[in-house]
Image 1 (cartoon, helix red, strand yellow):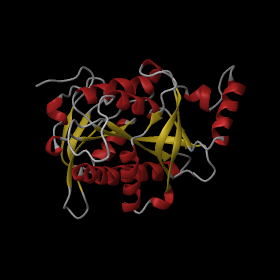
Image 2 (cartoon, helix red, strand yellow):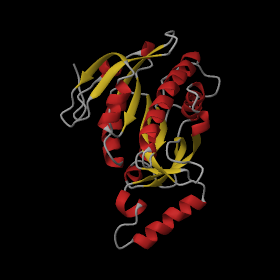
Image 3 (tube, rainbow, N blue to C red):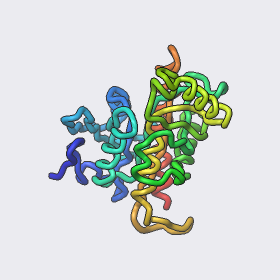
Image 4 (cartoon, helix red, strand yellow):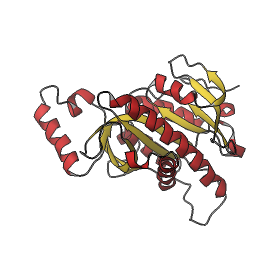
Length: 271
């Protein structure tokens, strides 16, 4: 049995869904990974020496007609940790990854308790610069965004869900909260993002989008093709935190992501 250095998983753990591989939920928080896994059937657990335990199982639709092989594992906080975890997942065969994370709003309409589906991310972090030049955009795959949006509607959460560009940073205290000598500069930057229509700020989407794009760089296909290698694609669903609404945001983000994965699997099956 093979295994990655940090996660302890190999291709045998990512196998499933008739060769398409398991759909992977990638929250930052270990406890959120456990809450996601509570929605699985037939759960197995692979212990990681670094605390990134993998929860393997089956996600079933409410009517019981659809069953999808899935895995949930935490990425830890920040782009460098995501780079390690996402790389090991894709090396083991992961081709469908959805980040389920937390965020803060940058838009007055996106109130705490809301859900944001990222269509792309501002690359305000350094890790993705080691993968692609700064001009390369961090964009979610169109099919992934469509599936998560469909999942929000199917779950009855469309009125609480927004889709748009998010901000990915590698500094929480300095950049977002304006702590330290560069406070004025950082706060001006965050104000610029608000005025530019960025919906929310978080820390992991941009590196995940860039890595999946790099992994599938040679997998360009036309809209009509129905065969060939399965490209790596990533989605990002964020709960908007704030006070007592944070728990609601977390639950809604998990629900949208689970419903979205079911929709994503159906879309993949139809190709």
